[in-house]
Length: 218
Length: 237
Image 1 (spheres, helix red, strand yellow):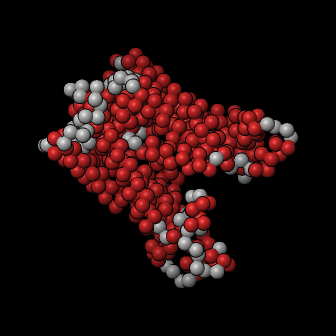
Image 2 (cartoon, one colour):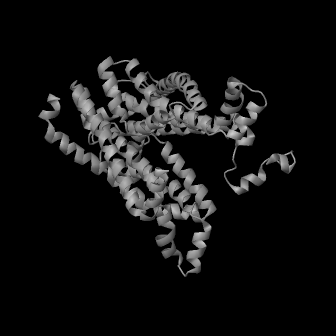
Image 3 (tube, helix red, strand yellow):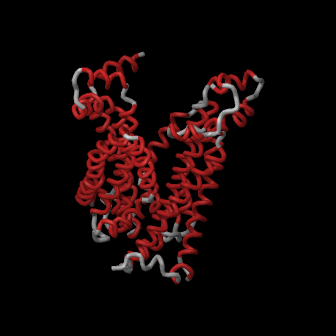
């Protein structure tokens, strides 16, 4: 505990850095995977293609992806942007499939009813299909966010990784408290973000609340 | 800068500490870890799924693991045990067990209860039900768990180069130390290729092992090309 108390300022800075590194990719990934998932759901070939490419990308280990990206992107090898792009790639790889599945699970009757009421495709997607897909999509985002928070730390092996710095520094200087504090902070951050996403999911789907309370009461 | 020169230089493959040696080390760590993890996780997962006891624990463990930073676990264990194979190996096994455990548990648990009842109705005892009905039916999810476990281990074994383990991660860590970027990129490409190859191999193995009756056709087009079912339609359903 003495190490932690003596380094509160450093810990706070690393925590903020970590949050940015972990959550910017999640936000970017969500923004990218909504249209991609829509496309995958619409066309059979698009579906096979995106799901296979996503599966392939998700297979590449994180440390390797951090290093492979620079020659592909033309970035410097030790540029933090590589970590952001890599984690965005993982988020998209995970979410494209989730979004496609969630959209295909929207009952056809509902989509047809919306069409009959005069909804054009774009508005129907935004006002009917997407809201109904929210619970499944949020479940996917929770997985992506928690993985992202954990994966940021790997970046510290090549020089930047938020709280991961407490692992490399604690290892090199033999300060076990620093390593343990880092692990605990990562776990707590994952828990808090996960809880916040559950809350956002509830806010976005007000119609599902009475049903869920009835279910838990039964 | 020629980023790929290092990878295609044959001397980097055959020398002491070259690609062949590091690749064999990486596969070796993965194989040892998976052997230990399979022995621990498959029987435990099958037992929990069969009896239904402690299922929530398995699910919680598998979910919690996603948040556990692998690098933190590695440096903590190596700091406590010392440099060598044992510390990283324990970390690898800790990370390898939950996906297999969750896959086996979910697989056994989700076997259609009508199938299990039919097996009991035919006079099968608990052990027969588990080995001849539940486990074969659970195989797709068991192999799915093994696949994510293998990927996790290959990935973490790469990071373990930071705590002085061998394997392909050495090229990334050693390359960084001397700012030899082509070496880092070459090592990374090899790690990615190894992960993809292992995943494809296991996918093929899954095709061979899992009973044809359980293999859902992914697309409609495929279903048409499948071997026609020799049984009459009423039985096939």
